[in-house]
Length: 175
Image 1 (spheres, rainbow, N blue to C red):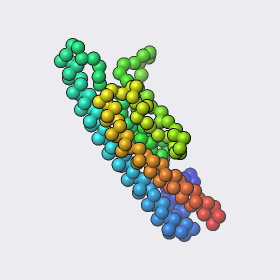
Image 2: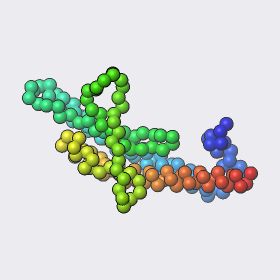
Image 3: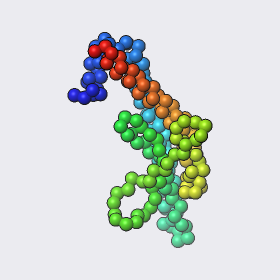
Image 4: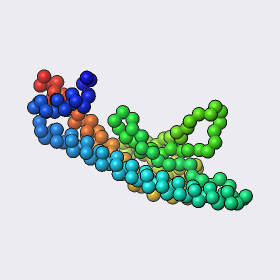
């Protein structure tokens, strides 16, 4: 059993070394982080529903007409979890492929660092050259909802991580 395993953490929490207030704070942070991630998933799911519906309409128009060019959207958000942290990121799913046939999970659009704020942020001008007009409106609407939640999720995760570090230091001193 590793030091960070859930069973070991439960034993440490119940051992009496960690004050109840700190245990309650960690549980509250866990619950709040899960709520934020759930809300992010809902926003992303709503985007995908609208995006797929519009792409379906455009595909039908293209199939009926010989003059309509490819105007389907290629950019969509996804929620990715790395280690224990979740990220709402934008991905470009381009049609076609070059070279060896292999699965593609899209190309991640890298967020930009803003000088006046910590962290990474997406700006609408990052999408202007690659998104269709109809898609850009949908991206702007969705990013306006994702951005504040992404910001809060970052700080809640940091508080959760700091609290876990505090618990580890209490246990080390008490053992």
